[in-house]
Image 1 (tube, each protein chain N blue to C red):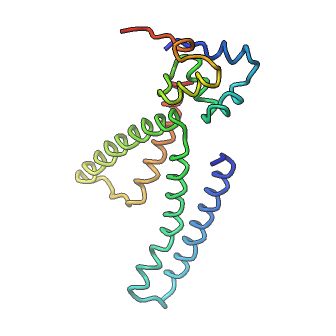
Image 2: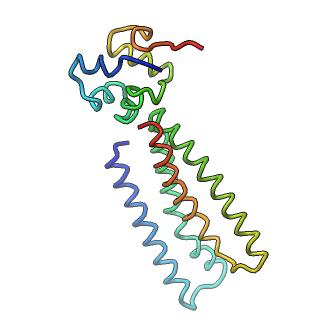
Image 3: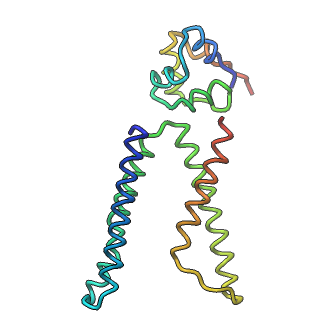
Length: 125
Length: 65
């Protein structure tokens, strides 16, 4: 997939996610929804999110061998880093630190992934 | 692994991007191979040899263990 095509499709996916999130929050803010519809509406943003995941997988499958190696190393670093940080904070919560939302895990992993990509990429430049 | 990819590419006046296009890989991969930071897989090594019309041994130097 050409980089610009991937960027365009990824942007469209993000816009769809933002729209679904806005709609979900709007509908959940009212009183008119009962279960199980509240659960379904709460999960609405995950539909475009699944589409974004499929797009990323398609992009990764079209990468060349070195790009895949860089991705694997970066993901391994991000995976390990996320495990260490989230478990450390889990122990800290037990000692009185404020509980954090599950929403904090993915941004942490994404940030570590980006940092690891830069680090690993430099080894082959 | 030492190789002659940069020398052979230069002799044909090809850019890294042009060679990458012929090999079906990214420009970064071509650069990594040329500077010896990355050793290509066997299929890619064969494609490189085919593009230059040489054998793998004529392009890549086996350092030996």
